[in-house]
Image (cartoon, rainbow, N blue to C red):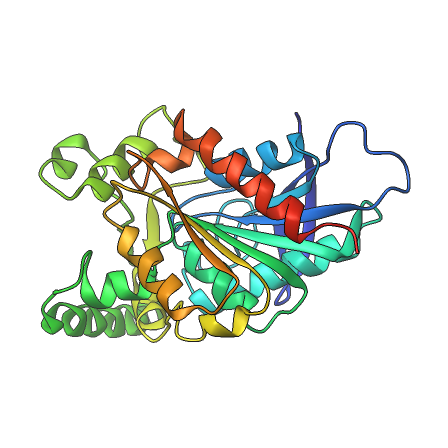
Length: 307
């Protein structure tokens, strides 16, 4: 299935998206739709696009898009990771879908993967147009920076990063030099000995498995001060009474994010486990992705059903 390249506005910037339409959709027929939002460091052509294509194969209009400052979307400086802007981009994607003749605006859901598994619930807490909320391998990027993977990171680490981010901001203004840091290790040697998330992140993003020229493995370092003041799940209870589904692998070193978020959420909610899967396995690997897609299909069919 070939997507249609589209553009839509978010905070005054043109975002680039891939729109997937179901085969056999009749002229004038309005279908349920799902926004799929990519991980930190990702682009629409990777796992977000894979899930969008699968959902379109199952009858949904699906939109994968590049966040502002990333991929093919507008925005300077490049590589900015602003969680609040990422959430606004998701809301803007919902607005775009709601204007399409092929979409029933009362039947729109959203799926977030990895860091977008935090951004999508965050956006949905106040955007009631999102009728069903789902995540795959969810991660709270702010907690990762503040506390480290699994928690327990010395507080001085974040203080040092914020000091460096402050220096980077001033350097941008005085020298025009922008500091960019790697998202995942650039080489297998650098990844060796690190937690599974980062080893497998290298294998996904930096090898032919999923490497893409628009996913350069760099983020604007001063994003740290915006990431650190954000929190994905503090208000997750506001999603209720709309349904929440979180999908995680039993072997994922990020699984605790989904577990803790579900504990904070109100009904209806479900944490669905994919046996044997790691965080990155759910990006593109069989049999894990088909299992996740099957669960998502049932979830969105039930909760985006015609009134």
